[in-house]
Length: 65
Image (cartoon, rainbow, N blue to C red; front, side, top):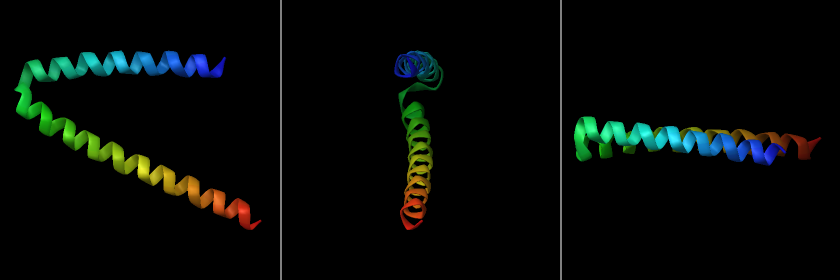
């Protein structure tokens, strides 16, 4: 049940992202959109790396107990 809910939420976010992406490209053109999405991608990547490092440190703490 939870995986189905996650799938639906993921699809909804994909659709919203697709609409937003199309709107931004139409508004500022391909070059601007490329730069903007590059910045967003880098920010998301740093957030994901930080989360993975936190999870890893929590696992290490659990192993040490």
